[in-house]
Length: 247
Ligand code: CTP
Ligand code: MG
Image (tube, rainbow, N blue to C red; front, side, top):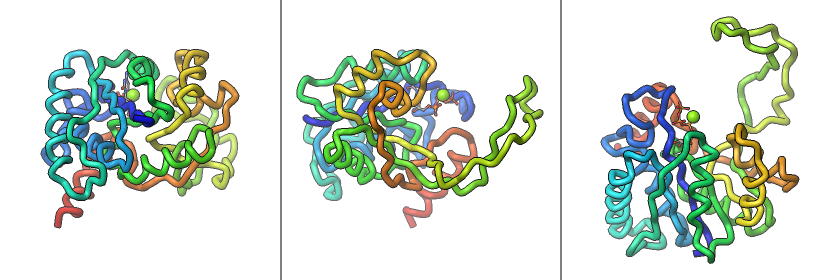
């Protein structure tokens, strides 16, 4: 395949606090990871899928992927049915960036475009990933989905040690210059590999790493369903959206 999708699912889900790693927490009866994979397998173009999971979840992740594969074959809405999903499961690292790097190490030689996607964005439509691939191909640049920000955003003086004590307002940020960014984020393979090699370890955002290496990154229209499930409230919202879509 010319495209690879690295699905990072190796986080612990501290903020969700569901008693197990976030990607394995059920959402309408199926692990979040299964939902995320359904989106990826629905892409127009066949892709290499690299699933990055916690060390003790490799077997379970393979089972989840097998289930998604069977359903994808039976589903006529999946435009490129996958007879045998080109998927491998690898063990993640202690930071998101490390997990991305473990995935990058597994790319097939044929891959030219790499997408990095959070499993926590479980409801992301396949069409958003297709649009990212199209835009990377058309521009040769990094591409990230983003949504306009609707909240009024303030710049605030450094937070005190006590999280309930936020600092003083320094000013309002011009909203028209802001985008809330999502995944999948897409890059030409050589650009991402070179940028990651040069990145400092504390950088979490792939697009920031690529931009810091001096490569342009474009924003395309994101999708409301590509929101990240971080807290209990996000999970509740995802449950409601799926339940509503079913009726
Ligand atoms: N991720 C990963 N490896 C890590 C940390 C994060 O693969 N060491 C992945 C998560 O599984 C998730 C995505 O990166 O799909 C976005 O991270 P986040 O939403 O922060 O998930 P967690 O780190 O699991 O959650 P928290 O920060 O609340 O612990
Ligand atoms: Mg995290």
